[in-house]
View 1 (tube, rainbow, N blue to C red):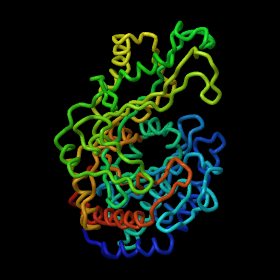
View 2 (view 1 turned 90 degrees about the vertical axis):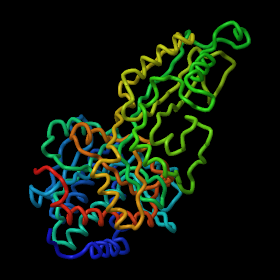
View 3 (view 1 turned 180 degrees about the vertical axis):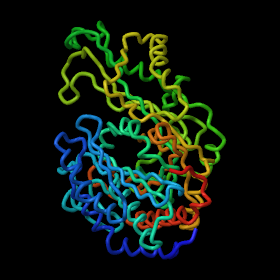
View 4 (view 1 turned 180 degrees about the horizontal axis):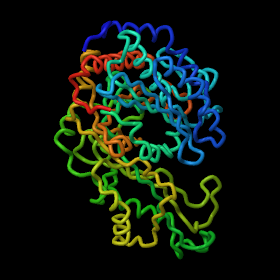
Length: 472
């Protein structure tokens, strides 16, 4: 394909953008208090798109369509598209402009969560890592290629939702109702962290999550522990033993139906050389925890895990001398693609009954934590190989290829609903405090990500006639 300019010219443009404009442009976006979990945030979610994002896409020759969310009260969903030639490949991008609560009173850096503040290599601000810097990087990279080449050399669509932090409510319904609007050859999105700050990462899927409560409720009201201790059953003790029966003392899952299927050879191959380097501020890995015989990378990127997220019996803040009538634990199973989710709760019930814990009830919330089922694109897919090769060419070192991120995101909407290979290139790092006070990005990582994405978009445009694809 003939083109003007050069890949190096596009990267030089994005380097200048980083030096002169990146912090300012990101700061403008952080100022919007797009807290989608806040009941009164809908107007601000619309303003973020109308005042900032849509003008940025329009300036790059994109046509923008803003969809109202099919879910009542859900944030709007934007689709920006630049169709240069229906015969060229089409890339669907993704980001989200909403953030979690600002937690203003707990913020210790700068002027609070809504103003970016630089401290050395760190840039603080709510939404910097999750996800405003990430989609700012990708939009800027698209712009740099257009400025250098005069075109992209491929068709681009970009989905920006405003409700990811509220569970991406309505997004599935929108994609199922308007699949033709989102037709593409590949999904390339950016969210979540790299495996380590200094190594680019390509992530091919996400774990699913199933949340449920375990509850033991034996009677009404508490009873004096001096008069009744040793005479009546203690719900907290029963519940503790029930939970302990689910794993070994080191967290190895005991229920066979809770385990993932055999790991494919292509996944084993990419896991061989992965080392988790979460960066400063991250907790130390406990080497003896979890499934024996697996590397830390295999435990989090290819194996299922069980966690107790919260437990309560009585009043922990003001305990009294009484045996509580009830004990509760909020639990979660994180699972990988191929796990038979239909057996998770039924096998749990069978296990509890078989071990004498019939008094333990399983309670699932109306809005279950399994909002994001497990899904994965295989590491040997041609698009995965192409993207990894482009990153190697741009940065001079190969990326880490992770079969599935440890967390959960709406990946299955792109693999299952739209039928696309879904590939994530994250621009944050594990210790970014993304859902906590003092959220931040690393500027050195952002600079590398800008070059990486500019190089990738340039390569796709240069090789577009040779990339297998379907026509729009």
